[in-house]
Amino acid sequence: MKAIHLTIILAFFSIPVFGQKNFSKKDVTEDLDYLRKSLEEAHYNLYAYVTKKSFDENFEKVKSSIKKDSLSLLETTSLFQTVISKANNGHTEIWFPSSSYAEYAYSGGTIFPLEIAIEDGKALIRKNWSNKDSLEIGTEILSINNQSVKEILVKMYPLISAERQNFKNAKLELITFPRLYWQVFGEQQDFIIETKKNGTITKHYLKPIDILEDYEYKRNDIPFGKRELQFINQSAYLIPGDLSGDIEKYKRFIDSSFVEIKKKSLPNLIIDLRNNLGGDEPFGNYLVSYIANQPFLWTSELTIKTSAILKAHVKENYDISKPYWKKVMENKDGSIYTYEYEPQQPQPKEKRFNGIVYVLVNRQSHSQSAVTASQIQDYNFATIVGEETGDFPSLYASQYAYNLPKTGIEVKLSKGYIVRVNGSKKAEGVIPDIYIKDHLLDENDEILDGLLKMIENKY
Image 1: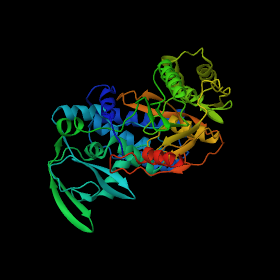
Image 2: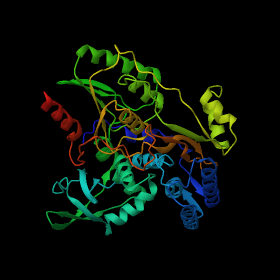
Image 3: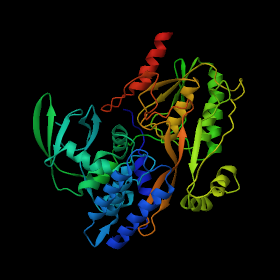
Image 4: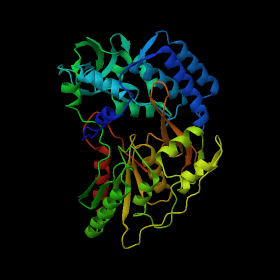
């Protein structure tokens, strides 16, 4: 798998939290109650993927586990994650405790030295940052400090919000196993691991590594946000980047890219929506307008649930005179309404690409990037290539955030339900038209290289 830039951890470090502090048991339990109450009031459908009984049982179990009179930010975050993740909705989440991790890292903290990929139900070494060169990439890890990997993952998964286990694994890959191992188990002085290679089980003794010098400064995170245009043989290769940010800057990049693409007069265009965190539909629509041959929508239906929490968020952050936000404010708290979109128009024929288009996706095609891929697929504007997206294209999303009143911890939740263009509400990702597996244990780009080989064989 190809990884280029260190981006995710920098984003972690930049997320504001209300200072590194301890919270009283009273404040934590009050915020815990507020978390459940606010989710029930503001989430579009909190019990879409879990029964209310199961959610409430988990809530009471978490609440009764609070025994200490004072809890750290890290402990509090982990408790709240265990509650919110029970909804099994990737857009309803409390993110990795970046401030706590940064404080620990900059105080000389250490971490588990092996990154792990979950392949076919096995935990395989993906990166080895230890001084044990004998631990080869692809070696299966069976246990760490006398706990099986299965037991460890059972403790990690409640910290990750996702609709299904393979999406949890994708997010685990995004956050990384060493960071999550630290969140669950804290600082460790030594690691005893059991591995299996070619049928032989071996025990290894490892020392932790310095987070900054031996891990964060050396590794590359999954590359998100990159925008780039290349020309490879008979194909233009466009990475549009995340579908968010400065919309005018994004449009200028797309416009200039298609000017260059038209100049080359190549028969193929490859658009890469892999390793894409998503964003907003105007970005996706603008990209699609350059390959569309008819008017198009980005969703067959979008319904929104309004609430007092959403209205407070909208008042603070948006222009309520604009139709989308005005409708949020006009509807009664707790009501669900449909928001209608006008069809988008393709670019003039002389500007848009009129050859063969391929769109690349993978398990790290999140949110709007998965929706845009499905939109392209449903209109038959391109051939989808790669592996199933982690996110569903029909999903509870339209995410926004608010802070819990006592601890200040940020909560993200879904206010809307998006249905893909073809109307399917099936609980699955975008299924590629051409499947190519992305192996996690190498730096090769199997999906792009495989497609380029297929194209080459046509000529």
